[in-house]
Length: 321
Image (cartoon, rainbow, N blue to C red; front, side, top):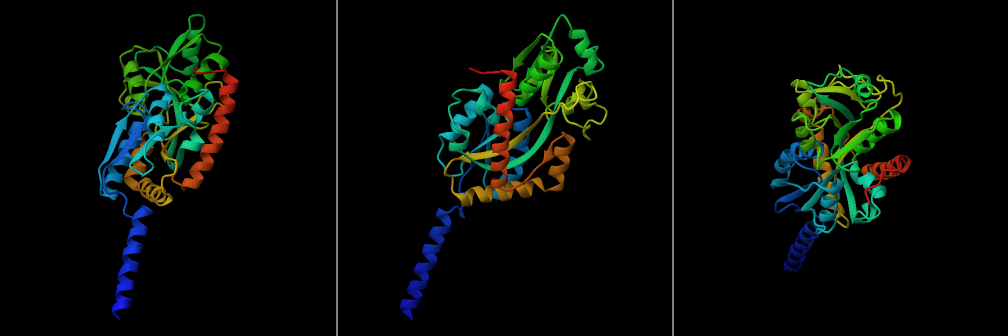
């Protein structure tokens, strides 16, 4: 009997150790979320909204660390070199799939150095100007810019908003358009509010509140149909450029070789957060559509995004090197 009890106790200890090793005890300390863009932008807003709930569910602080710069590459390099233990995560946008082709050597390999954890959602792009700008529509803006050109601000070199702005203003409209990159949507919006740049080409979330307050004016959204968050803002297609569509997204990544149990746990918690009515309402008000799914589904989506943006980068001829 004593032998059986001893064996039973040993089995329990071994099982407990195995669970801890495979991530079941995770987390036991704060989780650092490195955001690839500056505070106040699309990625930062989602990271903070989800992070607050994630902290409550994990029982540990979730610390947001903004590391903007180089189109998101600074943050990506940092996380790629971090321990694969689930305590350092990356939040990035479609930019990480664009950079795979835009840079000859971004300092990491998206397929080798990361494991996709969770896709949170996607949003169309938005073209906006200061409220004092006389343009009443995208057509007006382009007509007034003929012969003299314009400048447009984005979240950074290689961002989806950069490629969208270049394609619309230079390739389709034939304008002399100057790209003004920032280290995230927040600084770009601040520059537009201060009238330091003429046009914003950004994802919707950091811009929508300022359009609703009347400080900025939305000219067009880059979706194929109008969006509920800004029903009065026409699409780029309605402005005379049929089929124009650009969407960005926000996703969580972990360093490669992070235990599958930890990745699965994080994915489950983030997916459940995205299903909360209050979160859905807040994201919807900003024009972001939640897209929860499995790590495998995100990996498949990411692969398709890398291929899609590779074709677009090649077509535009944009390079960051």
